[in-house]
Image 1: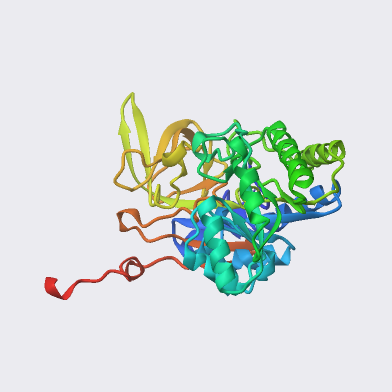
Image 2: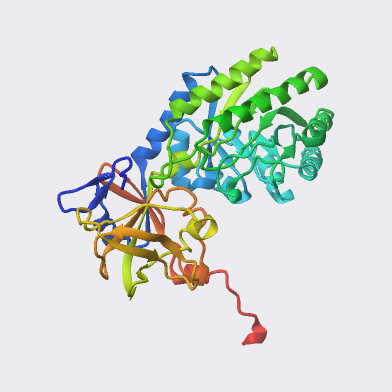
Length: 437
């Protein structure tokens, strides 16, 4: 078991995060409860800025909002000097309501609606990342009709696959994301883009996947993108001013994961970019990276309350908690693995193998299979670590379960940043037609 950030075991043998006792947090805010470590979030932001800035003169760190996005998170990202990546009107609206500077936003997404594009143009989004030909045509039409000049980045699929689960690979040829380099798809898109009177080509973006710890994959993608940039410069006179290499940097979930320090992959990536630029005699563009999971992942912990147990002799013992796949679908979706502890008895001896299961009406609602824990009973608290990324973001109301609350902890203070949903919240959009009486 690895403790992250400000985590420690206090004299009561309780898990403590940000100076706050998790047992007391559960009493005050209820469970399931997302707990976010503010100090670790800010530390991770600064580590990325320092690592890349010390290796390259023009760096922009862009937080990938899909990992974890609330108005409070937007405020922290802004305070730490990061730009923001959004992929929907909802994420863009969250940033807007939080007072985030729109010029620092990169608007991604493979199927932006006309309404989302109009919203982005009205709000003055800094860069729109075009993902396909249909979108590029629609963007050009809307920008022209609104008489707006819009900076555009083209997302490219470089044909490189990161060593990760197939559901979170994004850079391969057969991907729903981006213009492939294959058969000049990306080249022809930029050729057409250069003729637009309202769209300004600024650069390239790629993203090869998520939860990747293989530095070589990022370096290979960097070389491929620079090679393509050279072709654009010398054949189309289309200089790449911004080179966005995406994110997907892996974090520690279990002992199977190798978590790299940002300084390690920053050095490798920037070295690959520099050497490739020198090879093609190109000036240094602005280099952009988009850590999301790395910023928020280890900073999040979910605390549950144990309810029933079910012991099948010589087969398995189930420990049921008051959440599950509705607040963390990742294990069911792509077999994500986690570590956990009994938060109210951290010093207990772990010698009982159990399976932590959720309360959803699905056999696949298993949070952790075959984990060694101290013997647990009804009312114990289970803390599952590294749930800061893609848990709250992907939460649902499956089985009409209300979504959990989220708290931000720092120096002994806990602030609610997402209210727990009530049953009234769950049905607030339901309508009974008059004909049903």
